[in-house]
Length: 244
Image 1 (cartoon, rainbow, N blue to C red):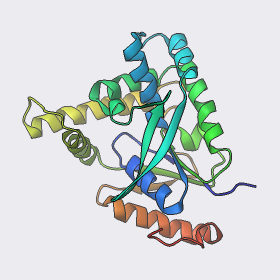
Image 2: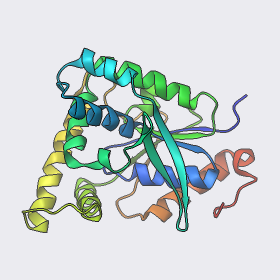
Image 3: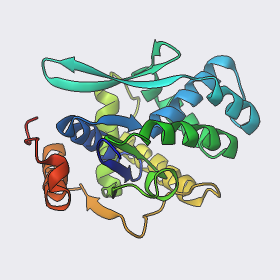
Image 4: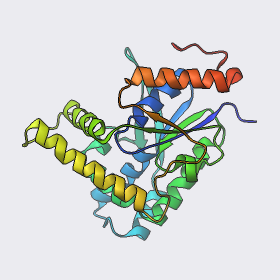
């Protein structure tokens, strides 16, 4: 018997699913798995080792050599998760724009997806996990207890990604409005790649619940999901409070 629920979350880039999933996992006391970070880890390693982003077999072999862990770090502001790969903290490194772009290419290769999907299923098999990505509800965890598709408008997603880059200290040559338009075009291209790839395309599972976060803060989004969990799985969250 599972020790907790398996919650699977999909959605497009910058739709809000990552932050919402992290906070939901913390509130539940569950493990959190960001599968997109796993693909970015492979992309980062490939860039470091000079492996071609078009060489699917070499990338798959690389993915098999990576020990990927999500470690919770408690701070005065609450908890956050660090990505540790082969003992190295890559939490910030994998968020660089060039790694983000490379990961969307890496993720299209079946050998990479086979390796990482197997790792992801092992991480979820004991339950008590919130896992997010782009094929979690449809491919990785089709029997999850709760399936969610979290999204937002393209304009809102571009603004969020721009704000994220600024928080990370990135400087842009283009004015804010022009840079946001560039990011919006990049997100549109990413959406097309994710939805059009032959292996594990991004799509909404038939039994997934769609949450549009365009006009919701992170806290409001988590509160919506918390109420949903309390209604659907009262025994699973009966011992917890929204502040736990």
